[in-house]
Amino acid sequence: MTEPVIEIHNLAKSFGGLRATDDVSLTLRRGEIHALIGPNGAGKSTLIHQICGTLMPDSGSIRLLGQDITTLDAAARAQLGLGRTFQISSLAPDFSVLRNVMLAVQGRQRSSFRFFGNVMADRSLTDPAMKALSQVGLETRAAIPASELSHGERRQLEIAIALALGSKALLLDEPMAGMGKDGSRALTDLLDVLRRDTPILLVEHDMDAVFALADRISVLVYGRIVASGSVAEIRENPEVRAAYLGARP
Amino acid sequence: MNRETAFNLVLAAVLLAAPVIAFAANEPFYVALATRIAILALAAAGLNLALGFGGLVSFGHAAFFGIGGYVAGIFASHAMYSEPLPFGLPATDQMPVIWLVAALLCALAALPIGAISLRTTGVYFIMITLAFAQMIYYFAISWPAYGGEDGLSIPVRNSFVGLNTANALHFFLICYAVLMAALALTWRIRDSRFGMALQAARQNEVRLAAVGIRPFRIRLTAFVLSAVLTGLAGALFADLNRFASPSMMSWHMSGELIVLVILGGTGRLFGPVAGAILYVLLEYALGGMTERWQLFLGLILLGVVLFARGGVVGLVAGKARYD
Image (cartoon, rainbow over all chains, first blue to last red; front, side):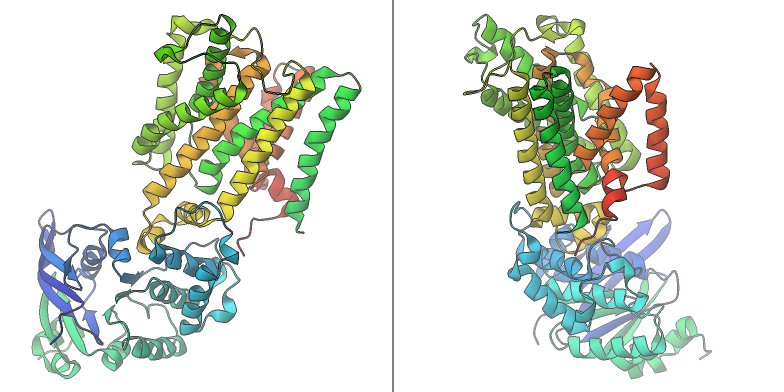
């Protein structure tokens, strides 16, 4: 078996007496969508912050493609190929949709210290950005400011940015949140295609999407992973049903 | 050509034509007024790089303005008496050399000031840049070798090869050329990859880090470039008044520069020019009527902040767009 793309070992993080992440280990393998579910307050956001580098764990380790990234900051992790989307869309609102993606291309090329040359005339920025936009179906919206996009389109744009970054792994934080039925379905189809190139760690509340997409599911409750397995295993797991799905065993 | 470009060209043309006509009409006062506008516009163009494009509200740019001014003053006084400078450097009254030294010193000062200040944001950034500027201000006041509180007079304006700097129009043209060069540089930087990262840092630093670009380095570079431009303006300002005064470094000056940028249009290429024209003309027109002219300036500023966020350029050309 090939090595996992993301490998988390015994991660722990406490805030005062609260163990927000309690000895979490999980992996993301090539070609898969690994869904992370859990009730509100289970510590999903804290875990994501630690994987992305915006919060440092107390102990444990995180590896990306075999490299230890536990102590790296968010920018360094992004450069190594960790792409992410945010629970609440985080874009440069004044920039056009295209510029938002070009910024990621520039990040990937590590070329931000060029002081001359108009970016809009630079095919090495615009071409890859347009390609990423057409992958998510936003190419017709390239010229409008990101602030004028609909909620669903912002979700798509965040994914295009992560793709343009040349991500080796994608971390999607509730991409379906606030989407209508059609939007969810379109996004589900998109993620289904994306996983072939880029494995996805998917944090999601929309159970239809999770059950439709996930190769594996891990359930987080009070900072611990209480169960991990295939869709069928998780559906039948009595502990999960009690803690998360709300049914009595 | 869009409206903003057209307006910019008009501003550039008016600022050039007015003093030329005034000089021909033998009105040196108006040439000096235009020179003051060009120099303040240059100082504000420097600040605009940090404040306008990078969103860094520096309340300490007077420090760099003053450093530039003192470099011009110190060179002039040493050159006058043919004394060598500190560290045994030969004294010269050549402006390009003085500008180079001013730029280097401002960059050297801005590097640690920026590196420390940029660890904070918001109101703390404003306060810490102010604190640094005040430190330098009090240092200048308590430095008797170069005039202390009295400042340092420049008996003969520094010189520029091929031009007579004592001639008001010649000196204006030097200042105008430096201003245009600085604006051209700002324009190139704005549209470059660096400019894109800088403007993204203003809008959303979390987004910038998520695509692998560290906001800190981008901002620090912008802060240093910004200080260098403002420092050049300071050197010219001292030469204009034939006087380098500690008041160039006081917090009033920092505030004035912020006012210029906001009046003209934050983050607009010619915003500092529009702001400086408006400010100096108001100072001249209202100052002739009442000593309390700054009260009216305050009211106008209030109006701009409440009703015309984009300043003069925003009023004329509408909201900034990033295609």
